[in-house]
Image (cartoon, rainbow, N blue to C red; front, side, top):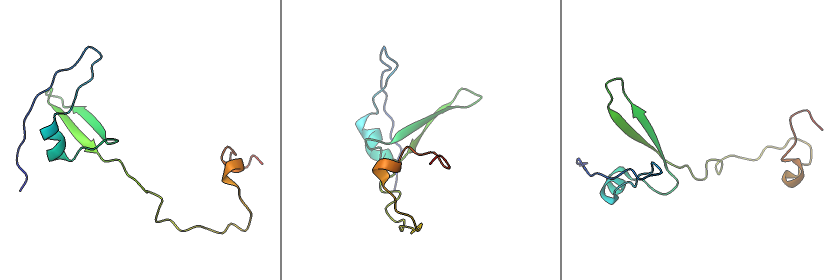
Length: 82
């Protein structure tokens, strides 16, 4: 059962903060995740964890376009610019 975790941290001179370890553990924050900051009309600050997605394309099946491709050569081509 999730429980409430509260901690505090200090904003440094470059306006960076460290997420306290107990908060990281409880929220499941890992390196590479993003934090989305929001301030409501009443001034309430909230933070949402945006999980880093690994292997987002790993389940895609290759498609035969009928033409040979070379990613190393073709990666900078703009559609229609051949």
